[in-house]
Each structure stands twice: as C-alpha cells, then as structure tokens.
Image (tube, rainbow over all chains, first blue to last red; front, side, top):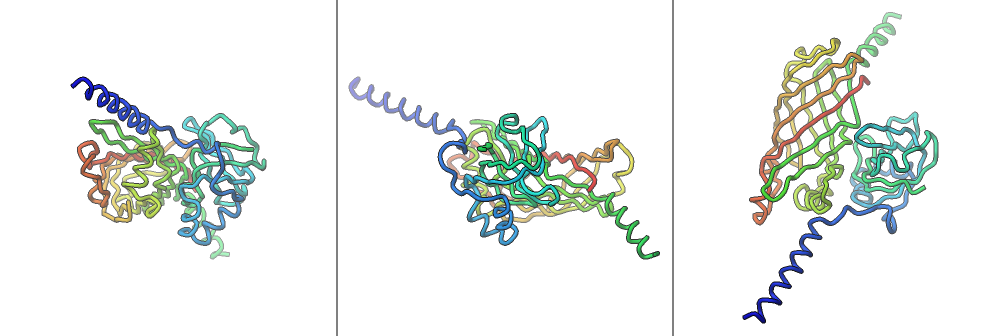
Length: 134
Length: 179
C-alpha cells in the first residue's frame, strides 16, 4: 500500500506546483526577446485610419515596437502615458508605460522607440505595458 | 456680418458645452470564492455634450489590466473574445440634463440611459450617476452599476461557474475638460 501512496503523493505535489505556477504566471515582459512587429508611428496610425478591422488583425494583442516623436507626456499618480505623433494632430499613439518613472523623462519632439501590447484604437491607437527601448 | 457673429457665438457656446477625455477609468469587480477578480482600464474615451445631455463612452477590451496574467488571458480569449469584439461602447444621454448646472461648481446627481454594447451584444442600460462640476470648469463623471454576463452572451464554462459571479460590478470615473 505504501509503495503506491508515495508516488501518488509526489505526483499530486508536482501537479499542484505546476498549477500554482500557471495560476501565478507573470505578465509577458515586452522588452525581452523580439517584437512581433516593428512599425513607425505614422504607419501604425494610418493603417488604423484606413481600415480598423485589417489593422486589428495585424496589430491587436501583438508586441509592437513603435518609433516616433513624442507629442505629449501625461503624468498622473496612476501612471505615465507617452503620446507619440504630431503635437498639432488630434490623434496619436498612446503608450501606457509599465513603470511610471522608468524611461519617462522625455521631451516633446524627442524621437523614441517604445514597445508595448497593442490594445486597438479608439481615437488614438492604444498601447499597454509599454517599455521605452531607445 | 450678422451671420458671422451668429456663427462665432454658436462656436463659442458649442465649445463651452462639450466635455471630453481620453483617460477615463473603468474598473470592474467580482467576488468569487476562489479569488477576487478585478481589472482597470485607464484609457477610456468619453464625450459629454452639456447642451443636449448626450454622453458616449468607448473602451478597448484589451486595455483592461489584471494583476494576474492568466486571468487577463482568459478574460480576453475565453470570455470577451476581444479579437472579435475589441470595444465596449455606451451611447446614451442624461435623462434630465437640466439637473446638472454645468456653469456652477457643485455635485449633481443625475440619471443616465442609453445603449450598452459589450461582446457584440447591445442592451438598453440605465444607471444613476454623479457629475461634479469643479471651480475650474472641468467635470468629473462617476457611475457605479452592475452588468450581468448572460445579458451580453458572455459564457462562463460550467467548470468555473461557481467561482465567477454572473453579476459584475462596474465603476466609471471620467475627469473631463471642456473641449
């Protein structure tokens, strides 16, 4: 009886551990590895303006690396959002930064490269869990 | 001249009567025996026209952030099917716009009714809301209501049915500036 009990107990423990790790698995770190798509801010915006459905097929849920000029930096207690695009334009690419302090000291007009998860487009294209790469 | 003056006045009053933000916040909560489910979306677009009382919200489903990555994955893939239905939209109006004095700082209770679209399903929705008019002319609109998953054909697998409540509490908080 004991011979069966031990392996079963061990298996249960391993199973439990795997389950626990899966349950607590961390969010995907976008700064590690390769981006799914590398694109300029203008191209990303224009593909959403032209055809939202097609753009969603291409970018939604993907790790997107965007290169563009900083139009605005919005800092609040809740976090920092860097808006890429032209300051005159009503629309842009909104990058919600993962860390509200790291890599967020940028000037308007500065050229940056930001990686994040594309969540789609409202008026602006929205990116989440963003990290500044350059 | 007269026409130009009328246009100018119309533009001024039009400008003053519209409020908007791109950084509204929507959170939802569900208490389950297994674990608390909670997510925030801080990139909600909202426009309110004080003249007509019309109000609109748009939120990207994938912009809801969960503490646990697995929960966020399940939320997007299994429940909300967010690649198929990337947005949630509310289009409605203040039932009685005169309840809110947009020109005078204060806290005003009001009622909002309209159509709420989630997961590709549109239902009539109604809620109490509070609009706070600040001294600087900006406003904060808040609302707190419940959404039932079954109304929006959001299917919860029977395996976890006991752990996920059908009734989800939704909190909206939008700080809007005059456009």
